Amino acid sequence: MLQVNCHRIKLLLLSFFLVNCAVAQNAFKTKFSKSRVYVGIEVGSKGVKLSVVEIGKNAQRNGDFSILKDTTVNTDFISFTPSSFDATLNAFTGLFKTAVETYNISSKRVFTVISSGVKMQAEKEKKTEWITNLITAFQKNINEPGRKVEVIDVMQEARLSHLGIVPNARRYNTFLIDIGSGNTKGGFFPYGNINEFKLFQLNWGTKSTTNGAIKGLTDDSSLANYRRQLNHVLEGVESNEIIYAVNISGAYPLSDNIACSGGIAWSVATLLYPELLSNSVAPVSYDEVAKFYEALYSNFKSLTPEEIVKRIKDPSVDKEAALKEMKRVHSVFDQKSLMAGTGLLLKIMRQFKSVYETKQFYMVKNGQVGWISAYVDEVIE
Image (spheres, rainbow, N blue to C red):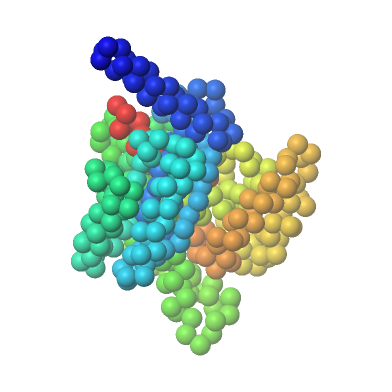
């Protein structure tokens, strides 16, 4: 009798799990026929990000993953104040409960991490206990004392991003550059295996470059002066860090493809090629980005969503969806930050541009969730 009851309980639990998975899968419009839905929640430098990701069975080979939901709550955790701690904890807890209770996704398929940017800033300011306290409080709030909240370092994050973003077919000839808010990281696999990763790192990102230019404005806050100050900052970054970082990486002769991810890559791809809205990657040339950079200063009106959508001639393009996505870009980045991020991107691209050898540049639009596909894949294995 006991054995029969145990068997019935197991069947009930299995049925509940399968129903739970079906509800989670059906709660979103999925893209692939054979896939599973996962959630990644990341505490970053500026906020807490939730990404609902569909991962296909061929994710590692073909890059079969798509973003079903992407939400960010700005909390500025790295200011390390009681108010930013509370805001981050509330956002972390709230997004976790949304994933489990609203989206009906099993907590086993919700992965939680602290970004390398937070880790680096906390170590710099001797505030690592703030991370420990945040994790402990979060585990208590969700009633999961054993919940794994991994604090990843810059090497892990860059490696996972490469594994999650770049398909296996281009794994060993692609150099990844992820331009974040406060820093830039990336790299490549030089020896034909995924165990040895060559890190590329800069202490500059879109926000820090913008701030660097703004600091030099003094009494003249005109756009012309901002551009002059930005050029000074970018020239210093190029001569003091970028050239050295690219040369020491040894990537030039080994990497035919340069994949750029991060918010600024998404912005450039979206505004340059709005008709490729459904594509996760947009191929671009150095000259195209250079012209785009110049237009950000001299003809910014031409890059507003309303003006760009007028130039779309293909009748098959969903202009309303493209307009909405372009408006998202302008809500995240203003003119000055677009100039700073694109300028930094261009300086990096310049090191790979040569009259003797052509490199193919790609802007990755969904790079912010790249780590979750690789993270899930490695955890499952």
